[in-house]
Length: 163
Image 1 (tube, rainbow, N blue to C red):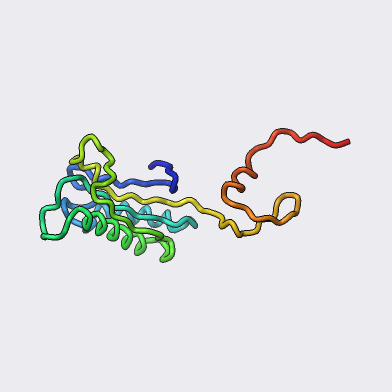
Image 2 (tube, rainbow, N blue to C red; image 1 turned 60 degrees about the vertical axis):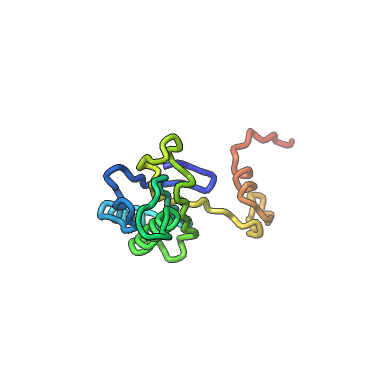
């Protein structure tokens, strides 16, 4: 897990033994189904939206003529999305499903490393629309961006009293 500009990134890494998908397959194996089912149960309880990404290593896909790592990564991301929604995520909770093939390698020094094959689930930050109205502590109503909200809630030094 890592915190990124998009939110909390949870990566389900492949290994030489497969772990979540069998080699070259977009069908989740038993281990992948169990892990995603557990995650879905927990993520379904939060208000955040979720993105799902599929990634592959750089080994060319050997199989159907026009089917490549692009299709495989997208199909794996969609398989993960389906299972997440079947086992706990709300229907409106998924915001994106993306396939990256081998374009964003986890281990760029070894493009064939099995850990480059993975599904990433990004629990996105909640943003406050700029046109939402917020009542401040002084009772005034103003509009607030997410940056304003963070700045407004920063600890402040002691206030000087007026006599």
